[in-house]
Image (cartoon, rainbow, N blue to C red; front, side, top):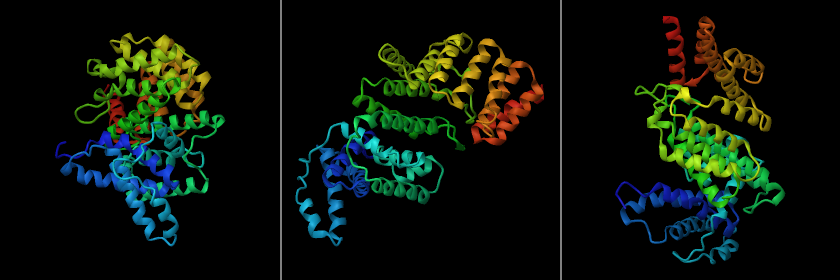
Length: 405
């Protein structure tokens, strides 16, 4: 144990288990989650000086339970609740649930009664163990705003009558898809932040990968869970090469592939290769397969674009959405020429109206086609529409290079 503080990974791994114990015992999600956050704060303050206890889960359960006792003793129903409090196990002897509680917690945080932003916030807070301040910083909103969002999410969970149990089998598949969407959203927000001075938030990407890895430990035979983990690993492997020394964005075609994380690439390729050979295909598996093709190309020029185009064609049939079609247009341009890609982009004018990514891709394809005035205008329009400063600098720089001839 160093003086720098308790290992964050240990604390975050324990959060779902400790919270699961308290919810199972008392049935109060909101109060239990607050108590766990207080226990985490106590650990951050005490463990650096006293050392990590022999049974850290039992320690956290006991401290969080005491916080609940203190809270409930001030309530009018103190006598009734003390009967429950009497059942609290001594420190070090608390029963700790298995990893299935992590699945229950993720499904609860992604309850259909919550909006997508609330699902993300609650997942990061309850399942990830991030503080309200950390989540607020990641999404560039005031801490008070994020606190209100999390509070409303807890109230919505309570109003919906949600319980800390696995939903019926008929609901589980749909709820799991929502969990995967939320984890992917968290990863994407970290990998390319939608606003602010930094392109990447490694806190969010790391937390998304950690939670997805935990989910795969619970559901090792679910192809889409495995596919999502593979997709994250293969994408995150390029992180160190995505920005220049000044923080500017470096596109995939110009990245130094010798600096890609080969360990993450090897794990990602192994995961996606294994899952593609078993069971039905899903969208995350296909996206992971596309990422694997990029990862296996020694240079940008050696990328197997025909294979990527075939995978995007299949993905668009399986899970059509504007962003898939946008990437499909790039692959089409690389195989059949920029005009073919531009023709496909023209079908996205309404779906992606005002989105800077549509303008950025159009600018790139116009540049490939040799229409420099139109490319310059599209780069400038994309730069005006993005709130990400690194992307803005990159797009403005492309326009300036075209203007310089």
